[in-house]
Image (cartoon, rainbow, N blue to C red):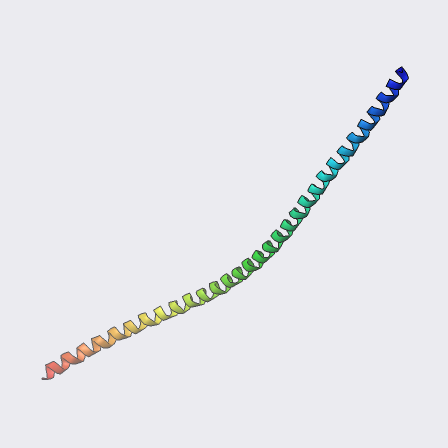
Length: 113
């Protein structure tokens, strides 16, 4: 009877060990599947983020190129404005000269009358 109890105890312990190992295997398999799903989701998210980063990089490069073009145009406009201001000041000086000549002539005409 003692050997039957020992045999029964060993058999029960073995069955419990096998059940424990089966449960543990399914548990870790489930965890591994979740990790694979999470990993796939993260990879997809990273891929989408890379695409967005490339898109924004291109837009930034275009914008910087446009800024360079606009800066060049602004500098040419500044130079043109300087030239126009110089011409305007020359025209003012000439206009003042002509006004003084007209006044002188008006005074001479009045003196003759």
